[in-house]
Structures are given as structure tokens and as C-alpha cells.
Image (cartoon, rainbow, N blue to C red; front, side, top):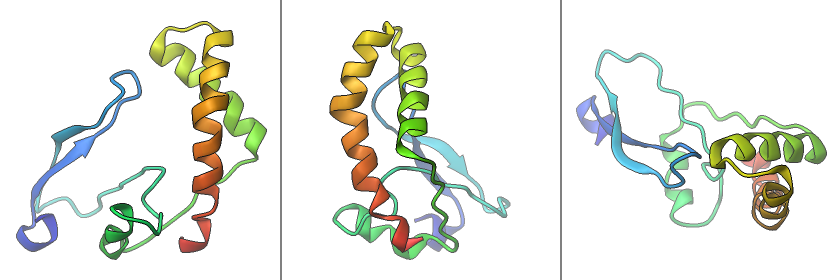
Length: 109
């Protein structure tokens, strides 16, 4: 819709909320650059694979796994108000495997 009409609404995501919020970000015809970030935007499985055609430029920001893990633990501790131990368990069970999946998409950038 945005490419065809020049404007539209896009979802947002906030870790403190936990789920995407549909149609929360307004994109206007006058916006010359729209930055879209997300872990799965370069994935080659549906529904994510359908999005790749919309990106004019694709970048993959990378860092070593332990740095990423420490950053996610710090972020999630604040976002969820959890202690470091509880956050670490969740990160190791959820975010680390997601990071490994996403690391395989850097070839699409």
C-alpha cells in the first residue's frame, strides 16, 4: 500500500510491550527515507520472504555472539523489569536461538 499510494501505516514494536502494534507508524509521501529494522526482515521463509522485494537497500549489523547476548540481557532486564538471572534464562532459551537463526540471513543483505 505504501509504495502504491505513497503513504500508509506500518506496525511498531516495543520490547516493553512485547507484541507488534499494527498501524502505529505513519509514513507520508513527503518521507524521503524510511528505515525499517527487524530481526526477520531478511529471512527466506514466509511470511518474511515476501518483504525482501520492498527494500531498496539491505544492511546487516553484526557483532559477536557474546556481545549480543550481554546487550539483550541488559535490554530485557530493563524492558521487563526482571532480575539478571531470570532474564539470562529467557535470553538463553529464546533470544540466543533467534540470533543464530538471524545470523544465517546476513547473506541476503
